[in-house]
Image (tube, rainbow, N blue to C red):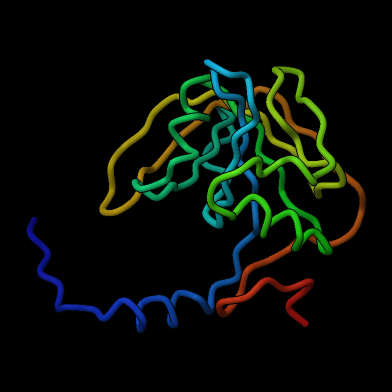
Length: 165
């Protein structure tokens, strides 16, 4: 089957799909050569399968952080909590030590977990596919833990929000 799509202007695409609120998740691991923490923010993290337990997320093909995380084969995903906007901005920054001013601890596998997160999901990368300007990553869930009660940080209509109300 061949699907022909009309040209869609990128700004219009973002505006329309920005109406769908997404969770804000830090995917982090350790560089295999240096052992330094590496991380990136994704808004596409989701449950994929219950049996076996799988999650998926997408990463820009231009990401300089994903190759550092990928090399370890496993990662920890911290679902950011309401009030963790500063964490999101630090991890989204380009270059430098993104974790220097953050409070974090290690997962059972040694990957960085953001302290105070809404939840943590530790995964082992299983598959990766190219899809347009992104990579789709599928991972086996190795450990998961719920954090404090409260609300998750969400991204909606182009900005971080404490809630949708």
